[in-house]
Image (cartoon, rainbow, N blue to C red; front, side, top):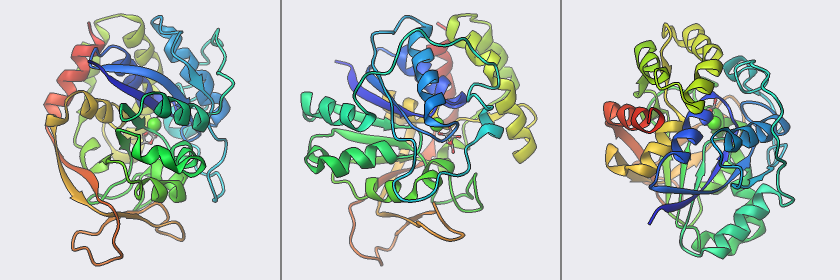
Length: 310
Ligand code: BDR
Ligand code: CA
C-alpha cells in the first residue's frame, strides 16, 4: 500500500525535483499539494504547484492555496535570487490550466487528515505556516497525523539564510516551533544531511538524457539555482539536495540515520530561525524530534535519478 502524503511546498527549483520524484514513486500516493511563500510569494508558488501537477498528467491532484504571511513575523527574505523571481529559474512558464481548490491549505490538511485518520504523512518542504495553522485550528488532528517529515533546520552545520538559520525555519520561526512541539512523530531532514547530498554537473547531465517532461523542466529551471550555489558556496555547478532528500526519506528511510532529541526554535534577534537540539535535555521538557544526522548520499542520488529518468 502506498503511503498517503500531502506535500506542503514553495516551488522552487528543488521543490520541483522533489515533487516530480514523489509523483513518479509508487510507494507514495500524493493526496494534494498545499502552497506556501518562501522561494516566491504564495500567489506564485500556487501557480507553480498547479504547473507541476499538470506536467505529467496528475491534474486530478488538488492544489490548496496556503498562507500569504507568517504567523507572527514579517514576511522577509523571499528567495528570488536562489530560485528566480518566478520560483522557476526566471523561465516565465505559461499559465497553468487549473485553479486551486476553494479550501485553504490548512482546511485541506485538516479535512484530509480527518478523512484518513492515522494514515496521512505531512511532507512540508517550505516554511511551516500552513502546518502550524492546521494544528492551531484543529488541535485534535495531531493524534491523527501519521507523521510529519519536514525539510528544514540544522543542528550541526551553519545556516544557509543566516549564519545560524535554515531558510524554511527562518521564514516562519514561530510556526516551526509549534511543529517541533506536535504530539505526532516529527522527522527533521535538515541541512545536516541535505548539504551532504550533492548533485554535480555530471549527475544533471545523466538525468537530462531521459528527456521526459520532468527532466526537461528541471533542465530549464536549474541554471539560476546552480549560479546561486556557486556564488554563495563556490560549488561550480553542483547543488545541495534539500527537498528531494525529504522525499527520499519517505521512500526509503533506511538511507538515513536519525537521533531522537528535543528541538527548540529561536524566534527573534540575530539567531531567529536557529534550531537547537537539546542533547542533554537541560531545557524544559518537550517531545523529541527524529533528526536526520547521517545519510547514504549516493543511495539518495541513485534513487532520485532512477525515479526521474524512467
Ligand atoms: C530550503 O529552502 C528553499 O530554498 C528550498 O526549496 C528548501 O526547501 C532549503 O533551505
Ligand atoms: Ca522548498
